[in-house]
Image 1 (cartoon, rainbow, N blue to C red):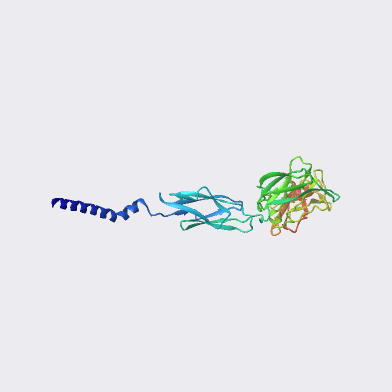
Image 2: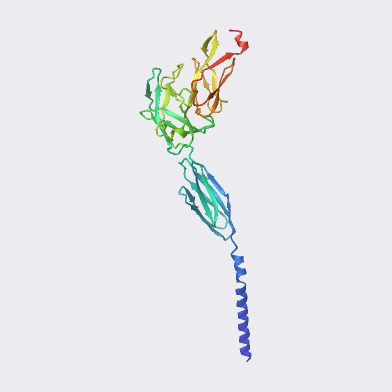
Length: 336
């Protein structure tokens, strides 16, 4: 009888222990498996048209797992792992956008989204190459290609002209005078001949406009107008006029009622920060190579020591020939 009671008591003890463990099971689970929340930073990403990398930080508790998914964007990929345990970072890589419009994608982590926006191509996206032929223009109006000519190339924005532009690799024309500039992503390029060259542009820099030219296969073939270094004409050589890319003319003074050229005068567009200034030749001729633009006013100024500066406002895209007249200051005029 006592044995039967002992067995029953032991069985009852085991049963109570089992019931206690089962009843506490949910509390034990909450301790070892915490409730997982996720915070993504930043909430959005902005990518440049040229592509590149960007990162998103996932913040969560230790032991919480996550996976990043890119939704409907072949141009955006994940470098490294797209998943993790606990807090971590995911890095994405965007390819270059050659479209004229921006594009978007979404990164998703446990029902939370990070929007990704990439800027449109500044060059119009139809091509990344500008080409043409470098021609020497002569006083008689003939032109001939210039082979094996080294050109230095600068990239700039539409706001800073050649000033502040970044140097790109040099380009050399082939045996037929043809040049090609590849990988264009800037809206404006400036080219100049290498120091010591037998040829030059009529000013230090000559502008190219990929933002316009690359939208037209015809305009993308852009010939470069050169003259021999000895050129000292009073006007542009025949056939050399290039609308919307330069301002040229003469600077003169009036002596006994007759206009005479002023050599060594400095001519600037605006404050001189957008394009390099020009210096007049012995004949008073100048040319400023600038992307003038067809929708903006520009101020052109000529100055020289001993003269009062003269200024005119021009409307870009229309006024290409601008002749300017300087006047001697009163103290200097008394000696005339």
